[in-house]
Amino acid sequence: MSMGQHGDEPTVGQLVANASKDLSSLVRSEVELAKTELKKTAIAAGTGAGMFAAAAFLALLAVILLCIAAAYGLVAAGLHPAIAFLIVAGAFLLIGAVLVLIGIRMLKSAKGPERTIETSKESVEALKSIGKGHEEHAALPEPGVQDQPGVRAEPGVPR
Image 1 (cartoon, rainbow, N blue to C red):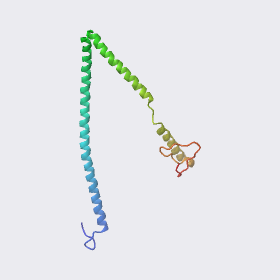
Image 2 (image 1 turned 45 degrees about the vertical axis):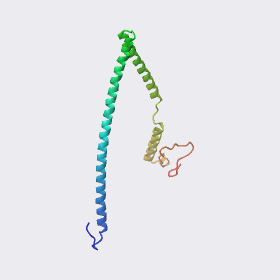
Image 3 (image 1 turned 135 degrees about the vertical axis):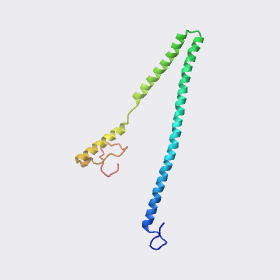
Image 4 (image 1 turned 180 degrees about the vertical axis):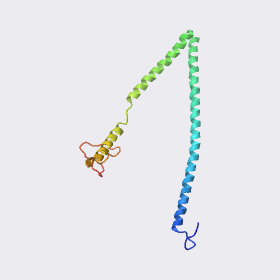
């Protein structure tokens, strides 16, 4: 660090320059640390996802083997092999149909973001009226605040 006019104290300009260098060095080191941490996190997440995929594949193989075992169990109970395999396949088709019906019912009950759509339309209308020069509708609706019937929103006045 160089000295100022008196020889023992740095000038304000030198202090600002040193602080700027220290700050940029700190920011660079923080960015480098974040990159290192994110790389380790991404590797761990990728490895975990790979493990889940392998487990799902093995579970699928197990389900297939259990289906075959169930069919052979029916064969051991005295049924013809073709009928035993058709019974197991029919059971899975029935379970699949029930899951489809439940899924359809759940999808029909799902609703969109109604309040967000409504407030977005209000905001667009307010912006359009501002663009046309109408000052009476210049106040944008506050997020999450519903208009009350009979109450007019005044600019700058909280509701």
